[in-house]
Image (cartoon, rainbow, N blue to C red):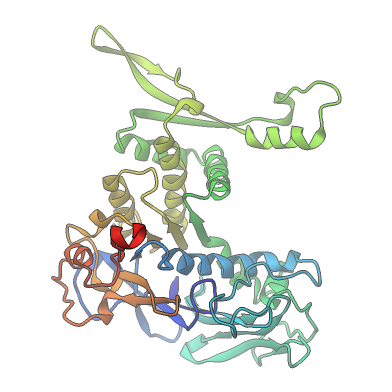
Length: 429
């Protein structure tokens, strides 16, 4: 569960931008937040969902990409070749002081682990090395350092007094200690590393991410009949006409290739067609139901149906297991009512018993209608005069109450989220 996230000097974000899942004192929309008792006895009120709005190029996607960059860095840096550049080092380019390879990008994440203990993880890094990395935890509610490493100390890990087992060693400059030790089954750090595995981030306009998620959903369908049945019900509720769903994994021997067929192309084709999806529709004769037919192939399903299969399936996974889902362009290829329905699954305690969290960005103002969100769930981005992204919560604006119509305020431009469209004469004059 995420509590707070800070980022600076990343893409269009220059100064520190802070995002929080902590719910304010308001008791409105009781199902939109939950209470979590953490180790030490304190109770946190955390939001189940949050949404980011903003004009095109205002930086809302970059806020979400920052989550992805940290997640990627933690999960993958143990595989980096020593000396390789750190790909997620993408500093703010519109300032001479921040655009250099040595300029540090900062990520700082406060989260609740599966052990109900609060953790604070901070990392600063340049293009080729980690400049600072620290992980604190709060057993019994008290702050303790688990480890720290820095460039100034030669990348030698300095363990805290309660790190078990103790580790004192030098790490490659471009690899995170959390990634290396967590992947190496360190008894205390592996659960923290694995926490990031329940942290999904994706852009629905990114074909590679969608393909990856589609494969995950298909694989889960083959492993869990209950999940497959629940996904079929989701597709049916969305009025796709699908009444049942079947996903089967094709073994290697199911593929036939001519002699001498290139191995790399063969592997790609097998991967692309590893799972076969059958969808079943009602077939009628003389106005009477005859049978369920699967004559309509998966390849002939609409892009919207396939998108719902993927994004809906991933959401069902997170709802079942808990964790965090960050989605950019949620409204892509999905009807506004369907997007609202999917978000509502996170608010419903019956469908979200493990308090999974959803952060998403969209342009669809209709999502703000019908008093769907609390003011602390509504976030906005805007560019300042220096071209840098600034991130705000609706709580930061005076006069915003629980009863404020967020959609009307947003459309009127009171939240700075409305694009400033230049006059035609200026463009063509």
